[in-house]
Structures are given as structure tokens and as C-alpha cells.
Length: 286
Length: 286
Image (cartoon, rainbow over all chains, first blue to last red; front, top):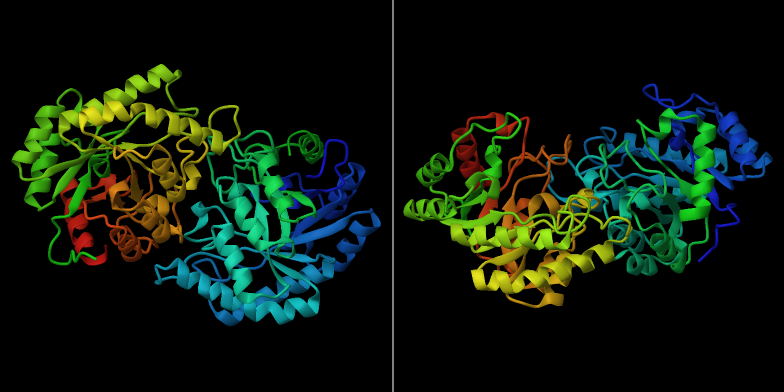
């Protein structure tokens, strides 16, 4: 297992941790200021959200690399199925392709996929996952041409209804196996998998080629909001060392990307302070 | 699979569905009124909560049986570990024993166990489950003498921090196997397991002797409160038929107990109407 105590070059920022500037949260830093602040602190990479980069993907990607870092990902695809997805299959595919193109503009090699909830009227997770598999498989040629890997992210089962019918690493590995293309991988997020004692076995089944991202935060014991009350590493109950061991023993050697949605705590703080705490916690508890 | 379309004698009420009379919710019906209303509608059994029966367990149990029904369970044990458990192991055991005695008073053959969250400072689900196993094993002689089966209830992973470090059927079966006593069983609740595609396999592994309860409700796609926004069967996205098939193919033939915590919807309605809807939905969608 890698030792981060004296080297945090594997640390990446998911810009969602600074608040998206949504609903009065976040300090409103433009991408350039985020890039400089990360570079100053020795971060290795940044993952952006589509809403933040507009049509400036190429410019922002170049700026990150000029600062000595990588763009490790783009968040995210549209919801592919379920009540929050675009209304037609063709609109889903159009926006899915657009998100792949946006990742390519940035020079991000990974696009995170949040698959969407249970297909309306189906009452069936299996049927919903079948449709997800079909849609992801249909996007593979576009992704391959763009040089972007698609990373299926299983979400915590609490989101199973509307945001993600994909709720376990097991089911994500199954989709990767069913499509069986190097462009189809998965991302592992502490918030979503911390409770799963089959994690190490399932990640071994996935193998290194199918793990394209590792996202860090913590699960607060008394979580008050399942969307926007994520904890900073060390403030919760997740077994961060064991989870990272499982990810690394499965062969993952990439960035560890901090993604903390925290409307009432971290999003209210100065972004510089938040980044400083990330570095300290990454070195001491992750 | 049993056919409930014309026979709802397997239907049971968990009185929590009528609101506990907490925080202004629930119509304040005393147990006697609940018993009569269930008997009138052909329910087969009732599960009570400790807080509702006080020291009247024997009297209430007899009243249920005189009305032609069973007491199918008591909710519930104290939290055994984690931040919400009584402060010392001896206090946990005392209250655990008291809850077993209360079930025996009622003539309930099953006591539901909600195990409590991650042991403070441990950051470890495995260590927390180890302590749960130790405590449940220690209560087995008391339960056996009382003729009460202990039903470990895995809760939805969203409760993993503070309410239940037991979040999968798989882990519940593992604890049953580790203790390996007929008094140690599990309860399956739609709200907690609806997302788990390994359910049928794990229940087969458990076998009929280790499944002591089946709880019904539905998972609302746009759940607004993970404690108190459960759905009535048919109003959500859970695949109720498939889940019951998994439970029954594993050998379970007992009551199906409706447990809906719904502060802003069902708890605000007339209990008679709620019971009527339960019967109709049980016959049509469960």
C-alpha cells in the first residue's frame, strides 16, 4: 500500500468539494484560482464538473498541465435512466456524447457515470441495470474514439430510487464484464461503498484495468443530509485505510480524489483552508 | 409463492405504521382499539413496540389472541453497540434481557434486534459486528429460556453509522452461522434490502429456520427523509413480488408485517383508512 505520510502527489481535488458556487455555497473561485491553489499545495490532479468549465475545456485542461498537474476526470455523464434522465433515449445519448467530448477537451481520461434511478413503471433494478448496460455499451465507440474511459460509479443504496440503480461494486463489475471493453470501468467512492464488506473480493474480481478512480471523503455517523453532508476524511466512521488497501490490492495506482459535498460545513469555509485540511488529512488518515 | 389476492390472513400490522403517537403523529389509538380494528379487517397478527405496552404485555397479548390473531413480534431490542447504545455493556445486557421478557409477556415469539452503529473510535464495521455477535450470543440462554427468537434486522446502509452496523443480509446470515443457535435468526425488511440483488442467494444460504420475519413497505423514489418517509406498498420502486418470492423460496411461510414510518403522510391519516389501504395493497401488489 502506498505511503502518503510524506508524499501527497497522489492527492486530487474534485472541485465539487469547494461548493460549485451553488445556492450560495462555495467561494466563487474561478477555475484558474482553483488550479493555482492546488498547484501551490502539491496536489497531483483535479477533476472538474461540466457546469464549471462551459466551453473552456481545452484552455482549462492546458492550464492544469502547465501548472504541473493532471486533469484526472470529469464529473459527469447525464443520468442515463430513471426519473431524472433526459426524456428520450436519443437525448440521453446526445448528452452522454457531449459529456465524453467535454472530458476529451479537458484532456481527462475518465468520465464518471452516474447511471440514474429505477426505470419508471418497471419496479425493477434488474431491468433498469439492463437498460444502463445497453446505453453504456452504445456509447463505447464514441468514448474509444475520444480516448475517454467511462467510469461507472455505484452509489450508496440510499440513492437507488432516483439517482442510481447501480448501488454495489458487485453490480458495477457485472456490467463491466457484460460489456467487456477497455473503455468501460468503474470508480470507487468511499461515501458509497464504505459499508460493503465484500468490497475487497469484488475489486479483485474487477482487476486493475477496470478501476479508473478512487474518491475520498468520510461517512459521518450522524449524517443529516444524504446529498450534502459528507465528511472530511477522519471525521467519520469509514475505515479509510482498509478501503484503500482493497482498492490498491486490486491493482489501482491512480489518484485519490477528494469529493466532499458539505453545504453546511466545508462549503462555508475559505477554499484555501479546505485544501489545507485535505492535504493534512490525506497524509495522516487516508 | 402464496396467493394473497383473496386471502390476507398472512397480513400483520406493525403498530409503528400508525405513528407511535410521537411528535404529534398518529391518532392516539390505545392498543385495544388497534387490536379491534385489525381483527375487524382480517389481519392475522400484530407486532407492538415496547413503548406502547408498558407493563401491560400479558394483558395485551391475551387480548390479541382473544380477537383471533397472533402477536407476531416485539420491536425491539436496545441498540447493542455504537453511539446510541446504553453506555455500558451491563446496561445493554440488562435492557436486552428486559426486551426479551417483554416479548415473552406478550406471547411474541420474535424480538427484533436493531444492532446499533459503528463502535466509537473503532472506524471498523468488522469490529462492530464482532461485538454485536458477542452480545447476541451472550443473550441466547436468556432468550431460549423465554422461548423468544432473536431476529437480527439488517438495516439499509444509510443507517450504518449510528443505527446499524449490520447493513446486509449477507452479514446477518454470517452472524447467524457464527452463533449457530436456533434462537438466533433474522428479519427481512423491504425498506432495507430492496436494492440488494444478492438477496435470493443469501436467503437460500440462511434457510427457513433462520428467517423469522418479513416486513413490508415500499421505497419511494424521491425519499425525503430516510427515517420517516417510507412508502405504502405500491407507491414506490421496490420489486415487492420478487422480494417476497426470494423470502418464500428460502422457506419462509410466516406473517408479512407492514411497517411504514411516514410522518408527513400515513401517520397523518385516520388509522382506519391506513389499515384499509394496507389490506387492499397487500392483496393487489405484494
